[in-house]
Length: 126
Image (cartoon, rainbow, N blue to C red; front, side, top):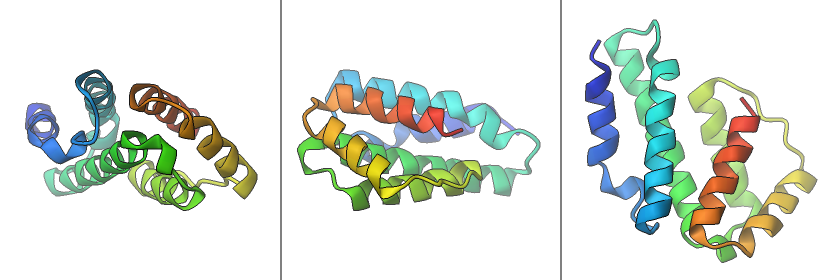
């Protein structure tokens, strides 16, 4: 399986970062590329492709929330976590209180800071 095919797929998909400025977009793309190896390891091409598609959905969700952090909601964060759980096979037992706290934190941030915060937060759930 050629890892570069999946990397190229991420790099060619403009809608993964279309709500973000260049710096925030680069952060999200770099993070996504960094997830590919663990997602495709030991999988056949079809399963690996499905995992990368899930990763791209997760990146779109981060793009959506971080692109306009002031409009983030607990529901949008729940949706993000749901996609995260599907992508990485992790259950998310995040209570409403934590979701509200994260929404409150990011709602006052600029998009780049929101991307950084959300990615660190998601990484802490792995």
